[in-house]
Image (cartoon, rainbow, N blue to C red; front, side, top):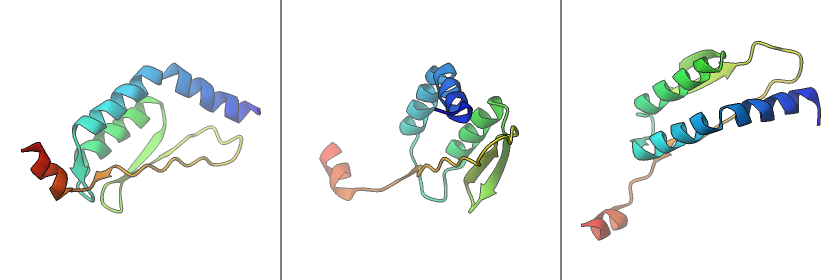
Length: 94
């Protein structure tokens, strides 16, 4: 494992509880595609808290962050955060 991989794993480990809390928050507040304003704001704030330079408003609600230590390759994390409406499940919940 090289030093970049070690740094990524270390950062994930250091922020484990925050990452889990963010995931649970997103799961608890689903938003339809292209309307993920709340989610985008929370993700951007989380990434800023890690010291990353954040760019928002990409394809409406997309968020991109840059790690300023450029001593290796660029790394991208892509997550799909919108929900899908399911009429059958809604009827069953009634």
